[in-house]
Structure formats: structure tokens, C-alpha cells
Image 1 (tube, protein in one colour):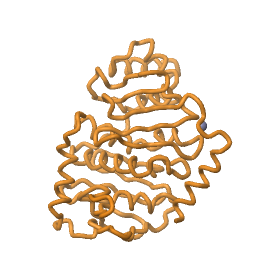
Image 2 (cartoon, helix red, strand yellow):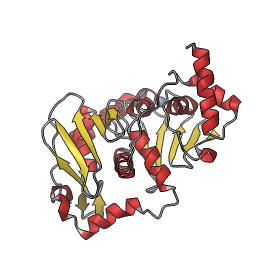
Image 3 (tube, protein in one colour):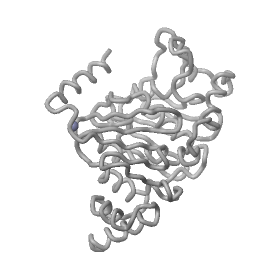
Image 4 (cartoon, protein in one colour):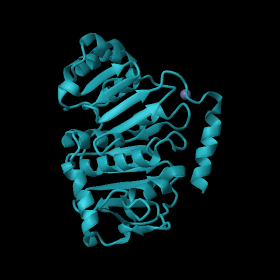
Length: 299
Ligand SMILES: [Zn+2]
């Protein structure tokens, strides 16, 4: 199929799935550097989407602007299918990914950090992170095929993930249930679907961190995930590629994608917020920032 025919097909798909005009959809489609092909598989079950979304949210909150080697959420590759998800973790971030995800009570913080209810199976090079309250699970391995190292407790931390899956404390159970029944304004079905899709598309998401080796991600509350970057893809180019890979499939059409400016877009009514600075934040200092981030991992 010719490239222009593919561009037209993608433009129509974007127009049909969003409230964008055909001319905006066509402009986006021309910026997608992929042919319209099958979308990346979604997790079929709500509990699987919920776990993946919670993981993406915790990783975004935890890493913020501390990525190495351009892996925004610490993930290099994903092997998604309808039932499960396999993640290949960036080797230099893998230990930190486990530290962020596995739940612990932090006395200094005064609450639980990580994904409440998450437990592990297996050891060595491949770990299964599973939800104690549902059949949901995600398998992780390092990109260099090395051994995964489980985090040790820091001062003031109680490692909840070491407790048996049946031994969830009331606090941990309550925290896990809050994600399912959150008081935030977001549509939880959309939130779980979109954040799970973010975790399932690391190659696209990591384009934001490619120019400098890092970008910024964070959350305001349990209903959103923000990605901020400066160089590389424009917001339209990133959206175009995400849309070509099904990020908006089946979302409520009215606010599937909204462009607030050439530098800012919202997906799913502010569930995923994409902000690109209009000029470079780092310039020649980017390497100093990378060295600083690396030092943080060593300590
Ligand atoms: Zn830059």
C-alpha cells in the first residue's frame, strides 16, 4: 500500500476516533512515521489494566526526571498480549524499578509507597510481579539478561511485599482499594486503559527521553500522568505516533485528544498530559545532568 494511502487511512481513523477536524487529523497523520497497522494489544481484563496503570503511575511519580539511557519509566521493551504483559527493564534502572514498585511502609512519609498488594514470584533473571487481590501479573526481566536484585529495606521502611499474599494488612488492602475506587475526578476505566497503554508502548513513550537520555514524568493525583520534554518529537508528532498505534482506540471521542497549544495535548480528558517545552531546557549542560542522575543511582 502506498504511503499516501496509509496516511489517508490514518487521518480518517484519527478523525473518527477524536473530535479533531479532518485537516488536523491529516496534518497529524503526515507526522506519524509508521504505517497504520494493528494496534498494540490491550489487556483484556479490567484487573490487568488496573495493575498496569497503577505501575505506570507509581513509576512516573517515582522517577520524575531521573531516567537513564532514555527509558522514561525504566522500561525498554514490552511484550503485551490480551492476558499479560512482559516488560524488559533498562538494566541501569531495573533495580530502582523494583524498588519503586514493590510496596513498603515508609515511616518518614507516613504511608505506603509502591503498588499496594504487589507481590513477587520467581527469582533470578525473570520475576513475576503479581497482584495479591486479583489474577493480574506483569513479568519483568533486565535488558542485559542479568539477575534482578530485590530491594533491601531502608531506614524507616517496612517491606510489605515480603509478606505472604494472604497477609495484606488492613492499611495495605485499603490503599489498594483506593486505586480501584478513587475519589479523583477521572473516569477510572479511561485512566486504567490509557495508563496501561502507556506502559505497553515504551518505544513510543521513550521518544520523549531520546534526545537527552531523560525527560520528566510526574503525577498530580491518582488520575493523571504527565510527560514533559524539550527536544525531539513535537507534541503533534508524538501524538500522531501514539494514535497510529491505537492509544485512543475506543476512548470517548469528545476528549480522546485535545490540543491546548502547539506544545501541549491531553489524552482522555487530562488523563495523560503531554507537554513539550518550546526551547531546549539543557543545551550543552545535558551531559552534566546525565552525570548527576547517574551519581544518584550509585548512592
Ligand atoms: Zn532539549
